[in-house]
Length: 101
Image (tube, rainbow, N blue to C red; front, side):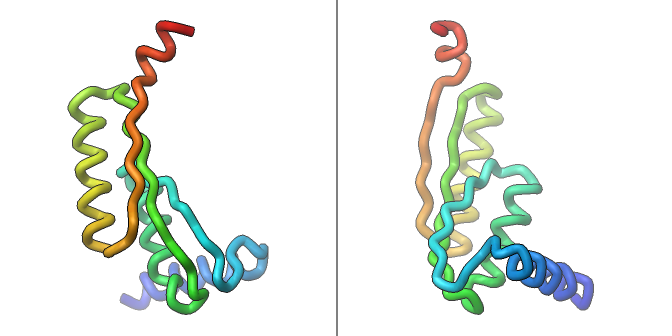
């Protein structure tokens, strides 16, 4: 648990030092369902109270990987429920857009 606390502390310190997050910021975090975006969201959630942040999720299902894309969206929907945060879900047919343009 000490290691996890250290990561959270480092994230807080770096964010404050570089003015990335200010108290009472409103953050819309893009969450793909991959490990990077999920860990970033978890870190933001862990500092939410200290910074008095307004934190929401957004997820774009680009339909590139078929059913796997749908599973990612379902996973992110479950994360939003678990964290009890508002989430915005959009769907765009990137393969179709690429064909037409």
